[in-house]
Length: 99
Image 1 (cartoon, rainbow, N blue to C red):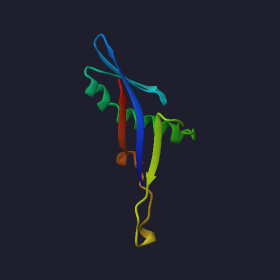
Image 2 (cartoon, one colour):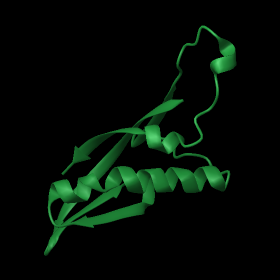
Image 3 (cartoon, rainbow, N blue to C red):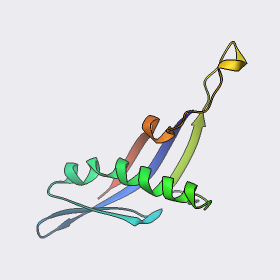
């Protein structure tokens, strides 16, 4: 199963680089030397945040700053349909950046 995720990321300059944060995930607060460096770290942080929510049976955020949609593969043989053990390895994150 593949999940398509869209999350708003806000990047703000700091004296020695940039900070990226996700309003839907207050625990995601990333520092990078450049804007791109900060943004490059967001998908990994997002995977960790979602994994934490899943493992603790907590709901995902709701609102315009986060959306998730499961994409289902179509199989001719239903016996071949098995869940992917590490869905985060197939994570596709689209980042909408507000500066």
